[in-house]
View 1 (cartoon, rainbow, N blue to C red):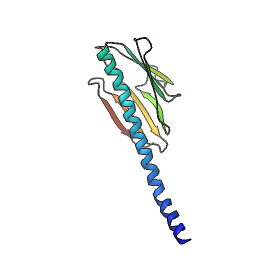
View 2: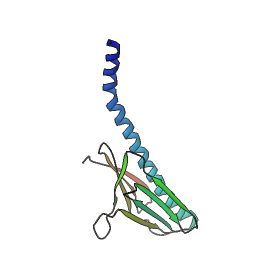
View 3: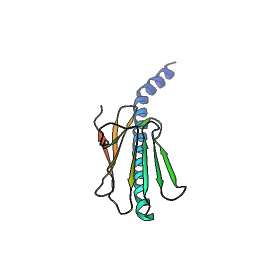
View 4: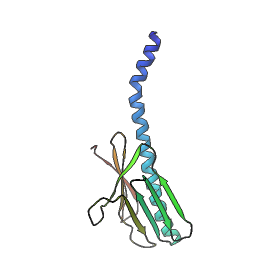
Length: 144
């Protein structure tokens, strides 16, 4: 009985940190996946000289990439436990829209794309594509 209670106590102490570690790994994985997805769109526009449309759907928690090549569609669903909160910058209307599309043109200016995501513990991050360099940047936001 004593051994079982000691094991239960150890599990109770370790579980919260183990759970936080898993959430941290999910957040890192999601940010890396989003950054890779956006970079793939930039690369495709540049290498294949095709216009690329990237659509971010907040309600569906997903990203979709389409090109002018017939039949080319790539989708990415954000992992469980991570949600897309909003897309930045806000549109000219100043209102959040549930679905936003960005267009990447060959040899054109890179649009300012930022996707804010959050995990179930309330940690927020923004994955951005820097318009001047085209590099993905990940920014941690203070807890809300």
